[in-house]
Length: 92
Image (cartoon, rainbow, N blue to C red; front, side, top):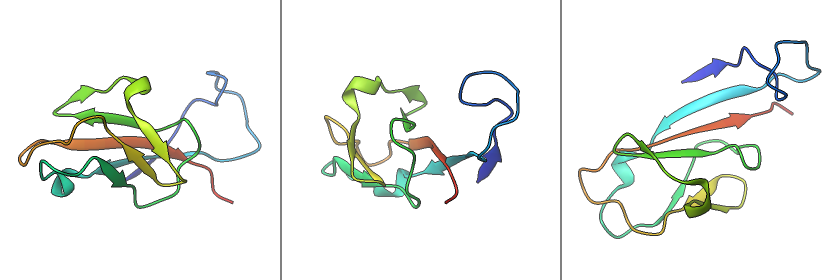
């Protein structure tokens, strides 16, 4: 589900030249206790991904970004864990 962002990248509400879309995605179905690398359905803007494991935001320095739509976690989420991500997409 995509939600428009009310704030620009500087934190203000002024007009920006590009539109940014915030995407929330549930990747829970990929949690199996073995997998540590995951893919999002869209290419995200660099350094905008936020990962939540069982509702807890993961520290940015523990989430490795892989390519334009992937990330890694230091340990594999277990079967039954809830894995959700939030990221920004700038249309080209």
